[in-house]
Image 1 (cartoon, one colour):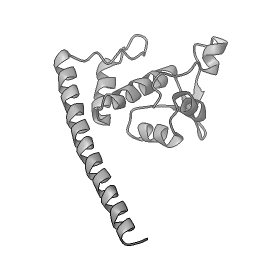
Image 2 (cartoon, rainbow, N blue to C red):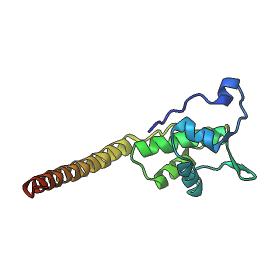
Image 3 (tube, rainbow, N blue to C red):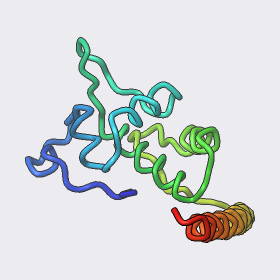
Image 4 (cartoon, rainbow, N blue to C red):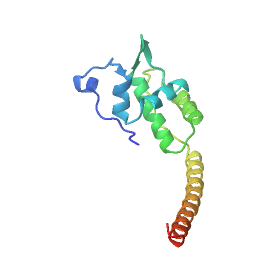
Length: 142
């Protein structure tokens, strides 16, 4: 998953008030159109509408960066939305960094370590099941 966007056509042209179409944003961040619509449905992104065209602002792009980084860190969409609301800067509409408290960082590390341990167990069990299936297949002459 790519979390830092490539330079957009608007940035290359030096435009500051640019709006970006859904396909441009999807390509820039390496995500699907469906994912963008899902984040919009969940209230995480708020593109403007011109007819059926969604136009994403620089603020939406900043929000999307935070969303993708939050997902990478293992936060739920509810937690990410709360972080977006808490960290919005009313002066310029830019999103501040995740800025987690050290206790939050430790708690998230522990959460991710538990998830990794559960994944390791699941992978081991699946590998064993696959090996048994291969042995059964060989023994039955298939």
